[in-house]
Length: 203
Image (cartoon, rainbow, N blue to C red; front, side, top):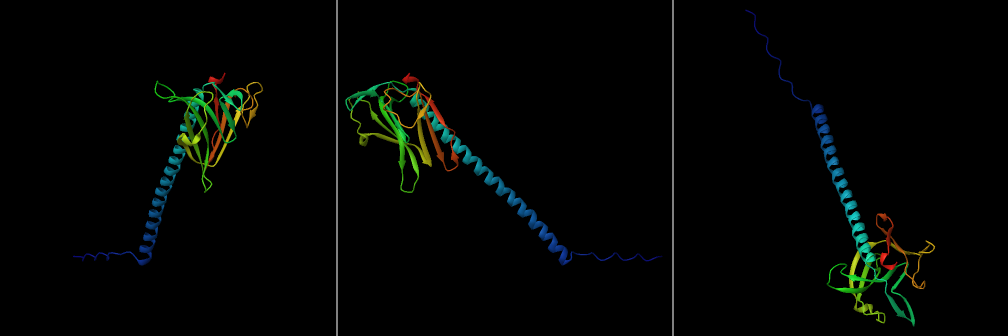
């Protein structure tokens, strides 16, 4: 009888093959973690964009409600009767209800403008005084205050003349209300779309 040949001895991995396998595994792990990092950064960017869109929407809605409910009242200022509305490149003042709907509250004089901090950041500040007639004294030290927007980088207001359609940076000496108000705001990510509001109560 023929003797069966012995099976060849089992061959193990060489050191070179083992090092190559470890290198490939390390590359795969690195790619996986890089992918997770990209996903995380993408989610952070998406959340930042959503937060910014929410800020724009909240500011736009608040201004729209307040300008939509504007009251075309007059005041006596330096012996002259003028519309209870004034504005400059930094902000504006007008009369509207607080709250916008319902029987609670009443008319208030609103002033909206920048609150500048020593570090250069700007907040958009709302101040409100109870309306007390055309002869009321505007003591803003007694006003209610609320921050409408934090960390704005730029803020510009414009007022549209109804007869010419021209946008002015100052309003108050015209003797009537503007037909539209435009607010341009910039933040850390750049400029917002211009916010434009009609003043139906002033027509």
